[in-house]
Length: 102
View 1 (cartoon, rainbow, N blue to C red):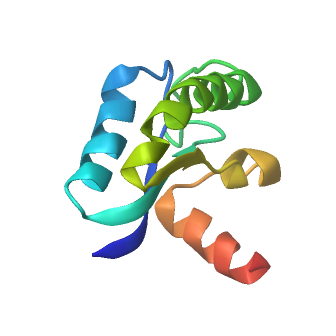
View 2: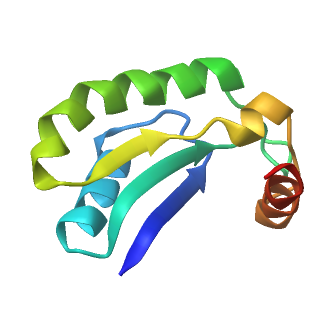
């Protein structure tokens, strides 16, 4: 079992399917917690909604549903790392920057 799983993506828009995946991996015992990591911008130049709006949309959704699912003993949250630091360039770049800062 993993302790934490990070699900990255544009989440433009975030919807219940995204949340259901996170909840399912927890319920089936693959991890103790899942964090959504929204991208700052699309690395291929696709136009997306404002990153701070997407981040807040995910936070509101998770806040509403995570409170109901806490009884399962797992946690679903949001990580703002890419948006907070304005990181672009995909997973490799994000992980490289993450380990530099932590």
